[in-house]
Amino acid sequence: MDAIKGIVDKVARREKIPRHGVSTGLPTQSPHRRHLWTWDFIFDRTDNGGSLKMMTLLDEYSRQSLAIQVGRQITAVQVLSVLEQAMIQYGVPSYIRSDSGPKFIATKVQRCCATTRSRRYILIRVAHGKMDRYIESFHSRFRDECLSREMLRNLREARVVIADRLQHYNRERHHSRISYLSPEDFIHTKILIP
Picture 1 (cartoon, helix red, strand yellow):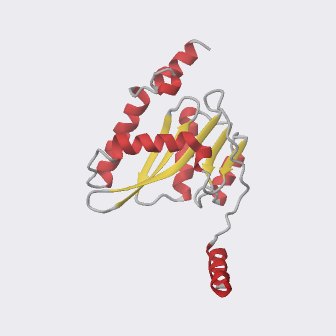
Picture 2 (picture 1 turned 135 degrees about the vertical axis):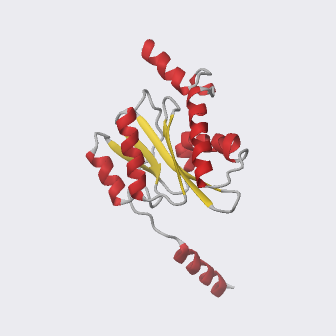
Picture 3 (picture 1 turned 135 degrees about the horizontal axis):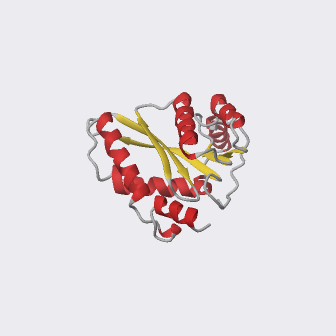
């Protein structure tokens, strides 16, 4: 009996893969726009069985979806491109938070965050998704309101449908956490009434 337990313990230790990077995923409340951006991946399939991988980027304060990159695979270089485009369009955030998946802890991504005016790149510990509750909530709504309802035949159609959904989410969908306004209305209201 002890021999079996020893083998099980040995196998359990062998299967654990250490993650690189320091876990700094402390939950914070974002006090203003461009304070904290969060990003993650969500996966789905097209109707013909092809894989879909989507990188989502969200401003935690306004709940605005800044970008959804759709592809079969998304590399660290593509992650950087999405981040750079968002920074050009929306400004540089003070902090960026993500899980410690391999694309996010890639040297290129961390180097990019260090060279921008972003003060800190926050990594969440493995299996602590609740620390990134905003992006997880966004993914849940995105899956319920788009991915589970739409028949996406191919990658091109997926990109068109998801881009349309992104516009709807930012301009028309009301959010209880931001006074039942759309993210764009909330941003406009906060600009007019500081």
